[in-house]
Image 1 (spheres, one colour):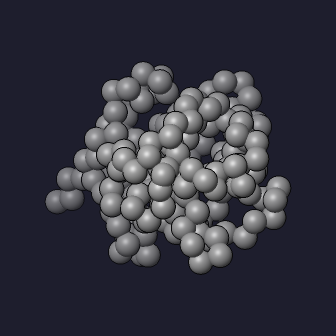
Image 2 (cartoon, rainbow, N blue to C red):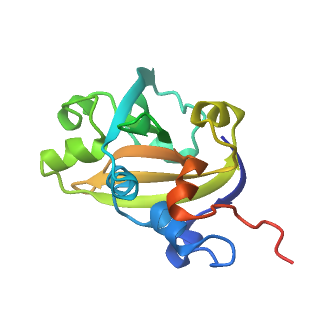
Length: 188
């Protein structure tokens, strides 16, 4: 995704002005709840995980902001679609894991991270680091929806240590449930 706007710690702490992004979109983007669970509640459908790829990337930064350096290597990258039971793609997600620990936490690779971690009763802290708004022709085609799209980076912490870095991009299809998602960049 090519960001046209990005917000860090101050935006996450105070939120965006309501004339730029609705409160309901902000709950999805900077709230610390499970997006998989939120998508299920919004759509009324079970959310399926379609694993696109799980690849060892060694110590490669994978074109990710400096945040990836908090995940010890060698690393594994997992890419998935989150979609409704009826097949509508709602989000694209990438997660980066310490390769030697991924099997301990993702016992079922086809389940959502939320489902895997909660079924094992693993206590976590979700640390949202960055919110983005941007374009991606590839995601427009894959979602079957026009951009720009909202995205976020966050870290899961467990036992005081970073567990995984996650990047999620949300389809504009969600406007059906959440209202318009457009960021007003031209503040006059």
